[in-house]
Amino acid sequence: MKLFVPVLLIFSLAACKDVLNKPLGGMEAPASMEQLDGSWIAEEGGARLDILKTSKTDWYGFTYQEQGKQTEGRFVVSYFERKRVLNIDLASVKVNGVPVVKDSSQAFLMVAATVDDEQLLLTPADMDKFEKHFAQYFFASPIQVEGLCKRDNELCNSTFSSGNVLISKRMRKFNDELLKKYRTVFPYKKQVVFNSVNSSSEH
View (tube, rainbow, N blue to C red):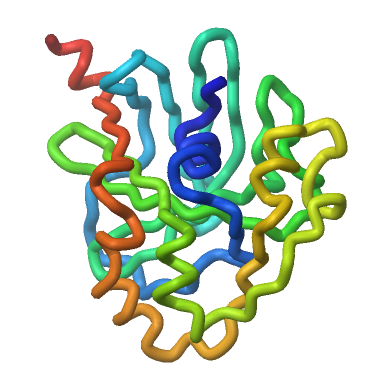
């Protein structure tokens, strides 16, 4: 079963059992960067990802379509110099109109995003490594799945049953440390490649 790349790949590939209670703070956005919004086609499988910038600063909506399933939601971008991390708001994610978690949930998943030469590269965070390297910056509180997940959502319940909510505390120096550990937390081997629809149509 494959859903939106940042959701299911994090669940299944990124050793995900932990969520953030709020988006990463990050740094000031660079003056100019490649556009994130637009329409993208997965290099493998041909799934379509549409990203639309909202009126709220650094917030985007997304729709992911593949094999009759449509996943939609929103995320906010955190910047670390010229690196982007998408903080996916789990409470906003719906699959074919059905929410993944309860709409009152404060839970965010992380995906690195790079736009390079008409390609969008998405890399789910390895949350085991994130917690290992940044434990001093967060309190870890066990996830109460009955408070997070919809009762009949087996994927959500099984994924987070042994996980933690990471609650930020003293974040001084965090941004610098994340830059140093960026590729460890977002490993290339988990990267998924999307091509611009405009670029694909030209070939």
